Image (cartoon, rainbow, N blue to C red; front, top):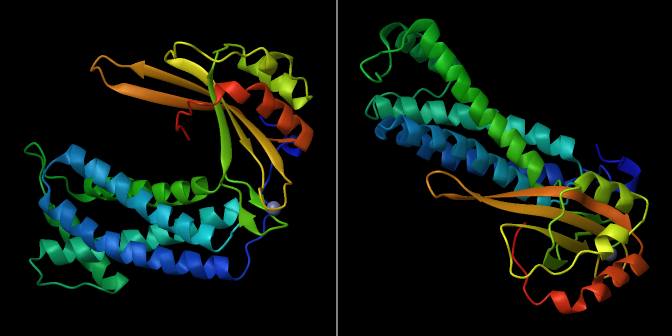
Length: 288
Ligand SMILES: [Zn+2]
């Protein structure tokens, strides 16, 4: 666990425009994506693709709720979680309206929740579709629908929550601090815990010993320095471990692990780190 006092933390401010923005973005995303979703699920017969569409639908709604929060300057991750959840539920509802409309060949527009439940009840008895020659009904179908709902609502809440967790906010200038100075790729080390422990007590022995990695391998470290350029305050340090692996299908996968994220440092420490790697920052891999 991170030692909370040593790291940047959102102030918890929600503000007035924040909820309005999240509501506007969440509503539009749920209506547009929910309509597309109902039709996509109705007409695309591939279960694996449908699975990704379901996850993508929830993630898309969460993304827009997060975007609304960012524009509305919401510095409260719990609020993001709550709004992501609410609009995930609304998106699920719109998805059902759209799917019933698509499945009934545009004959049945069920807008009221009671109407939707009546249709679902009917479908649960009859079966709504078949897969590999099996037509799920009753409890099996309700279970599938429940899992689908959890996926959509969970993704929406999770993605909304995640969107602003890593971006610090300058309370003095009232803006997100998105500019960052990236240093790396640097030598990979395996003892991440020790590096973290050292940095938390402002001991830079290990960090200073890291050299620029040449040639670049599939495992390296990267330093991100962040500070507010307007007031020249609020300096934070992030150290990431980036590992690229190739699986049996020859597909590359990059794992980014934050050894420390947004550790509070002094302007002097910021400058010292920056100067030390002055000549190693020409190549900046864009990994976030
Ligand atoms: Zn500032």
